[in-house]
Length: 377
Ligand code: SF4
Image (cartoon, rainbow, N blue to C red; front, side, top):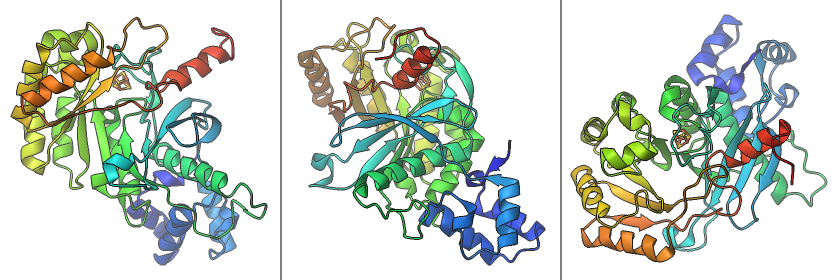
C-alpha cells in the first residue's frame, strides 16, 4: 500500500521533492492544497506541473477516511464512523462549543480523535477494548479524521448550493479548533505516529491548531508521559484516573498493575515540573465502584499534590458491561465533597448520552452487525 501524503511532515516532503529534482517552494504549494484547500485529488493542484502531479500520484495516496455514518442531532454531539483503506472502522466525536464555557454563542468545535483501531488496554468501562487491539493509526489517519469531519461540515453547510464542487479552489471552512485524543485507542502507545500527526495538526504549514488546544488523554503510560514532557510543543495532558487508590483503580484500569498510582504520580510530577503545566484528571463516576463519598478524600489529596483539575464524567452505559451511572444526586454530592476539599472540579453533563457516546460503541455495533452477531436497527 502507498503511504498517504498526509503522514509526511514538511521536512520529509521537502526531502522527497529534492530527490525528485523539484524546487523547495513546491512543498509550500502542495501543503497549501492539502491543508488550506483540503483538495481530494492531485489534478486539483492546478499550479503544479503535470509531471510532478503524476509522480505524486505514483508515490502517495491522498484518501481521507471514508464516511460510513453519523449519529446525533445537528445542535449536539455527533459521532462519526469512518472506514479506512484496509476496511478497519474508527470513530470520531464532534462536540459543539459549550456557550457557558466560552462566554456566549461560538462556532468553536472540538473533535475527539481516535489513535488506534481497537485498544489493548482493556479499561473496564470502555467498549473500544472489548474486541482487543487491531493496529496503530498512521499520522494521516489521525489528521484525516479532522479533515474528513471538516469536509462533512462544509458539505452540510453548503448542501443547498449545487455549485459546491469538492475540488474547487475556494478555501474550505476551518471548523475545528480544539482536539482531544480521547477516542479509540491509547495515543501514547502509538507515540511516534501520534507525534507526527500532531506536527501536521499543529504546524502553520498544516492545520494550524494551537498546541494549547490539543489534549492528549492517556490511561497512564508513565514512561511516555515523561517522554512527552521532553517534547517541545505545549500539548495538554489528561489522565484517565477513575480511581484514587490502587485498590479502586485496579478494578477499572488494568494498566494500574503495570504503573500503580505512585509511578503515575511521579510521571505527572515530572510533566508538571518540566512543562510548568497542570494535568487534568478524568474521573468517570460509576455506581458502587468509585462514587463513594469517602473516596473524595484520596482523590482530593492526589489532585492537590498535582495541582490538577478534576473532570467528573457520569458513566455511559456500554452494551455487554454491567456497570451503571450513579444518580444525579450522588454525582452532585461527590462533586460538592471535592469542592469542599478545595479541589478545582467540574461535573460534565455528558453530551451524546443517547448516541452510543462511550468510546468505541458505534464501531463495536457496526462490526457486530457486519459479522451477524447483532441485528441491524
Ligand atoms: S479508555 Fe482508552 S485506553 Fe482504556 S480501553 Fe478505552 S480506548 Fe483503550
